[in-house]
Image (cartoon, rainbow, N blue to C red; front, side):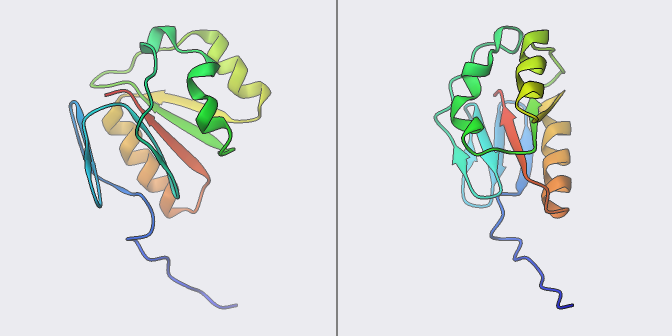
Length: 122
């Protein structure tokens, strides 16, 4: 069995996460975005966390992640229960947490080669 080390520069790992800002390898973002191992959706314009619907994630759904981490800013804010149900019917996990925790978890799951997406409300 051959082991190959993934180049850390290839994945969109989060380098830092501050209130209202997240830094990836090549750029700092100050507005809401979605990040996966291979894609960045930086034109994401979601509703408030408490008003999110599955339609807010339409572009992300086409990427078919196994789990979505939703970072809701400096504190955890809970989206409507219907959003959890909509993700569950698509067999996609949804975990909601504050943005710093979401960024840390995203990096950890990337390192485990999981098919994860990070949706950040900035």
